[in-house]
Amino acid sequence: MPRWSRWLLVAAPLAAAGSSAAQEQGADSPVLLPPLSVTANLVDTPARAVGSALTVVDAEQLAVRQTRLVSDVLREVPGVAVNRTGSVGQLTQLRIRGAEGNQTLVLIDGVKANDPSAGSEFDFAHLQAADIERIEVLRGPQSALYGSDALGGVVNIVTKRGEGPATVRLRAEGGTFDTTNTAASLSGGNERYDFRVTGESLRTDGISTADERLGNDEQDGYRNNTGSAKLAVRPHDGVELSLVGRFTRYEADGDDFLGGIGAVDADQETRGRERLLRAQGRFDLLEGSWQHILGASYNDTDRDLKSDGVVSTRYEGRTRQLDYQTNVLFDTSRLAEADHTLTFAFQREWTDAESSSAFAAFDRDIDTNAFVGQYQIDLADALALSASVRHERNDAFDDTTTYRLTAAYRIEGSGTKLRTSYGTGVKNPSLFELYGFTETYQGNPDLDPEEGWGWDVGVDQELWGDRVVVDATYFEQRIEDLITGAGETSVNLPGTSKIRGAEFGLSIEPIDDVVLRAAYTYTHGEDANGDELVRRPKHIASFNANYRFLDDRANVNLGIVYNGRQDDLAFDENFNASTVSLDSYTLVNLAASYRLSEHAELFGRIENLFDESYEEVDTYGSPGRAAYAGLGLTF
Image 1 (spheres, one colour):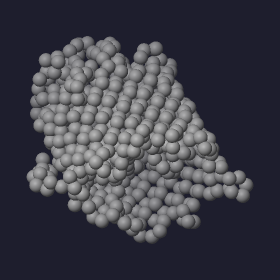
Image 2 (cartoon, one colour):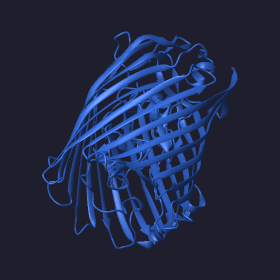
Image 3 (cartoon, one colour):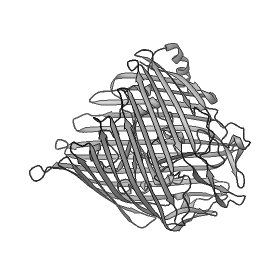
Image 4 (cartoon, one colour):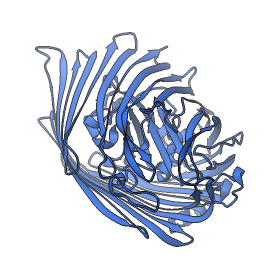
């Protein structure tokens, strides 16, 4: 445990005053979308003008749920399915609208966080939530804006900025499975600068990764230390220079997998490190109507896999990017009451992956140049249209061009917004799928990129003076040349995979200080052979109720997540796959907090209140009922 977290565990009980770092904001709000979206387009866009399906989770919602891992709150987002392979710290995948995990792009403060050495997928297992300000989930093909990995959608994570006088916030908690979680931050800022530094540590003895109900009783522990820093300076009006960095180091005990049996107890461990860095300069000219953004990003992820204490395989993936974007904003009030935004961008990206083991080693890279254009128009503050196009050139595949169209129409005085979007997408084979090699796998350099397209149509309706917000969306997606496993390699599956479904959301504030939220998603996905796509439950639902009382000193939050029956793959002793069915499950979580004073807050929660037994991945276990309590301080 790092020295600062030991100090926090000692200091917290002595202080008896404070507030939870994540609960520093006001009362829960029923608003479905925030005033601006930073993800739906290349330029910050008012929520009323967004034509795509978008869900936002802000810091306040993370706070009242006492979210510690980002993946837990994403289970409540429409269109999103989450699967964790056993105990905390194990592989955690996210699928949007039935697309594969590596068809979702994850951005953290503008940095592409997907791991080139892990199938170009982002593992949500290690993403803690202490410093997160907002999470935007953009659904549907977004390759026209964000490139290859955004065929299914985008998860954009924005961390907090400092503001006001220099402030120290501390948090410490402990609970079931010998778990401790500590966090500390220092932040501040004014009109010319802002800064925030955050550290968070999570330690737990965990459960057996292999399902205990199958005779596995060895606990698999997890350790995670994460640090982040964010700095911005504004030396002149219209000029901002910013720097952001994030570093995570983790150790996760795990188990083995045997054909014909599944997950079994074993002495295995993964040690990993994740580093993200971005430097950016923004310059606004002509009173902000001509904007220039120049940035450089770096993402480095490495993992050592150990068996019986000896490193058996090493992986490292790196993504470096230089980008430039210019935005031109103007209006045509004399000809037509309309606001226009023209955007042009260029991105140069270097991606490489390395792997070494007793069986083989590879070191490959791909360079990509992307040219992006986007046009947005808002007519009479009622009809908003956008059109985006992207052309990519790389040294491994043919050039590709993708595009996206959106529309949003607001009916004045009714609180109604009608929206629709259509987009095309592409997902290049990962470097491991092309060139990787293990004892049981050999890459296929002849793979073609996956191509897809999708559309949706929806309505957002505000009622009862904005106390009720309802949204409904119907969507369809198609993916050609889906890459799938075949024996000891990967192949393109001939034909088209088809996915369709519907998403519903409801937010109600029946009385002041009470907020109710509900969501439901129906998804039906089949591959080109007509087989149901695995780990895509047809039915997912959630309900959340939050109540503030005693003049906002106390808060209670109830969360319910339902995950319907889903198919998964089982493997015989020769690793031939067959389909198995995993039962549905319902998780109930309860959280409460009480502010002792201006500087102190007590909090606690119970996860899986009714001790539900379930599997998210075949033969892998999941935690039972767990309770946690702690104290937050602010100075």
